[in-house]
Length: 256
Image 1 (spheres, one colour):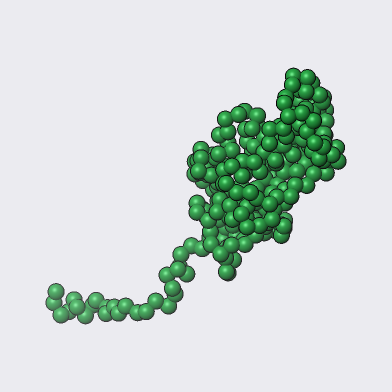
Image 2 (cartoon, helix red, strand yellow):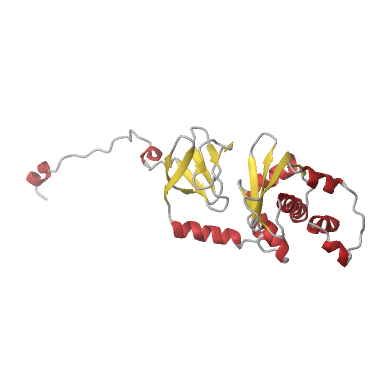
């Protein structure tokens, strides 16, 4: 290259960066964890947790943590006054993540979805943890927990139950819903299904994690509470015992 061409080439000197590299990257405000279906919102010092409601996510945070759990993915949202709506996400990715969690026997949720007995699976088939597995186990072993259960009979044809597990400071850990079956359905039977699901969940927590958690169960059905407090009349099951009204609760309690 001759001297004349060299003069046409401007001299370039590399200067110091005025903006740090991390500030140039796309900053995601919301993150979603598919296996627990929890939305995380980035804050200056950590992340707030926002549980799933019927369609959207609760805009009121249910907890706080310093770092994101494993499996969190960035997601676009549209905040409203009381809820947060997910705008864009990869449906195939979320479904694959949920399927992997469902078939993972190394978690309590995966274990409950693969119980051998059909009646157990019906009681716990919709169980979901709201926090990570590590947080869930830590709360079971170190904190006093509260479990509130309820049953509903919107008409005389179908009924359902639901319960939620939380710490005493209001941090929600897990929840479960399911149908209530039987002839001549009533609120007593729906409440009984919810209480049985809750008690059987505690039983599996005890056997799966080998812990004895401190959980206080709340139920607003006085008849169910009185029935549960009565001593079991017989240790052996007889055929006529199954003919009693709503006998499932007493029979199942006999096996605990």
